[in-house]
Image (cartoon, rainbow, N blue to C red; front, top):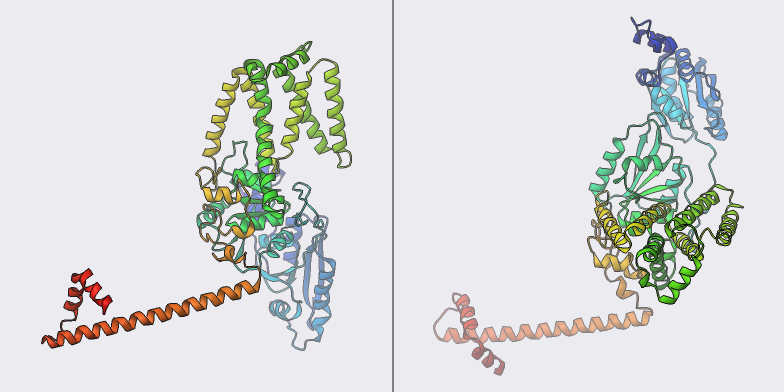
Length: 608
């Protein structure tokens, strides 16, 4: 029964229904596709595929006959999704190589398993029985093989669409480290991860999300290292997604993030495989989305957002310096404009008198309050920043820099803004560029405007009140159950010093983060730190020789103690035998008397 017959049966008795008159909508068409099964006749199956797919451009159907009885068959695929070389190998094997077999089947029912087991080259082959699964496989680049006389079909892996070459990341630039970055193919992205973690405990769970896009989403984690509660929560959130489209990991992030109304990101997005692998080795979980070069990593914390690859690939002292510098930069970019407005309007006594007089002299003739000056310059700079991002890479930076210089100089010359405001805006902009995470940088830019208004209305007390509200909000955030300010709130001093506030040596980082890697706290042997300093083999030999000598002396000492104890027990047995007592029956009493005699008996034993 064709599509028109199904629609007619579905809407029987409703001839005036506008849906039936103008055609079925997408939800009804999807329901019909899910209920449709394959027929035993090849002609009907081809007609179903053409009818449900609309005989669209790119749909290729190659019919052939196979075997001595000329069993009709067909290969169906979408042009552009398959590899022409692999497809030619499959067709050649079906039509040419199959003739070498003497036991060729004479019916389509026998031809299907014969082609699957003996004829088709070593490719991934799956057997399907319904139309919905047929379209799922075909639209992923598989070739569908149909034979007359059977209601089954074979889906042969012939994927071969064009992908972007693996190149360096533009969003996360590093001076030292790997240059590979994720691309839009989920298979290539998973291969980049598997090349770095070569253990069978690296598990990948496949999800299909999006009623129309049917996007592949892979949940990646290390079994036995990632928390089971985090995994269950991730599976639950993914299963609850009900939408037509998932085109990018940003669409997925909107459905599974913990705080959708907060300006702070609670999932770490990255396009660097080395960063994803480092997170997996600490107990985090990754989400890889087909069609997106950005991988989501969770649980994520505020300190994870401020870490950069150079922190780990350079010496710890340099990494710590860069990290502290980055922390100071984000504080400066968030609070400097608001504090400047608050001090100028309400607390000028904080500035030295000479400096304040110079600032007041530069503001003579400026027709606007300082808050208006600052907001105008900040808004202009944000427009220039956005224009520089949207312009081509060859002219974007030049336009933004020249525009900022020209506009700043022209505004000062025209008396619209004062030079100190331009300096504050420039320092704020330069400090904001030090934030390695783009999403966290946007949060800082939004908070900056809020603190400017608080400083203009309430002064430094408004800034203080805003900081308290900000701390309360950030402390309340969670990322899949993990506190957002971990390990500073709750305070875990070892994690804070080891790899969050500071950067320790790699050989000294023997423990994983407490709240994330709790299932396997130790990264390796506990003796790794001590063995790191044993540079020469001679030192190890001497240490081993000393250990053996020490153990030999200890054995001799233990043997001497045993001999002394045995002789002492023998003397006691002889003395007790003389008194007419049985030493075997009075053994426990002897021990009790010995312990009760105390220091006197110990002294006599030492003399003997």
